[in-house]
Amino acid sequence: MKLLPESTGFDALNNALNIETVDGSIMGRLESYSCKMVGQEKALYKRFHSFSGVDDLQALSPPQSIEYYNIHHTLPNNASSQEFSREPSLQWVMRAVQGQMMAVARSEFMSVESALWAALDNAICLREAEIYSYNPDHTSDPYSEDGCLWSFNYLFYNPRLKRIVFFTCRSVSLYIASAAAPNESILIGNTDMDFEED
Image (cartoon, rainbow, N blue to C red; front, side, top):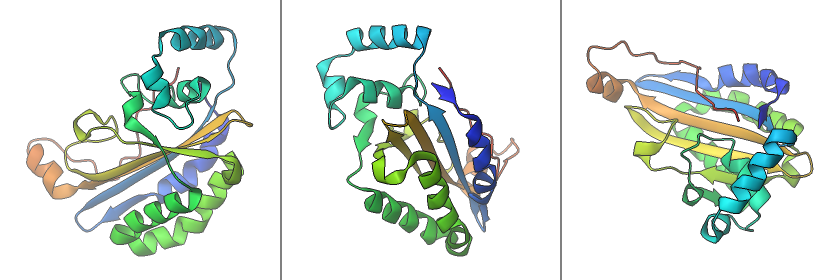
């Protein structure tokens, strides 16, 4: 799995998706990955496929092992197949994102919403993309932290382009984070997130 240089084209959007609110912060990020396998990755996929059980592959609908391999390897190694689900449609995802963001940062999100979906369409061709959500238990969520009120993680996968765009966002309460770590400085609006690459 390779982080594509075009991810730097998401910089302006990533900055716009990091929003300060009265009582906390919203932190959003887009990243684009290539799923084209070469040499060592092909060997890893064959090994992965031989060890993957039927239950793992059935967790995605339809159960395609190459699809699961690509999506799974966009996220940290401890992600399990039970934490992924296929979303019913692009419109459903757009409404879910809009509802979550408009509730906490209406004006800020309205100013970036059309650019967000245009950039996603340009990177992944949304009409061809299969969309998955990653819904880990809060305690094991690598993109969560003390004070996290909500988060969403969407993966847009285009098998023709052999590409995945990862869109993650979370809301962190200043008060809860401060109470959880009273002696530590609280960094609100930090855009650095850890993404593991294979």
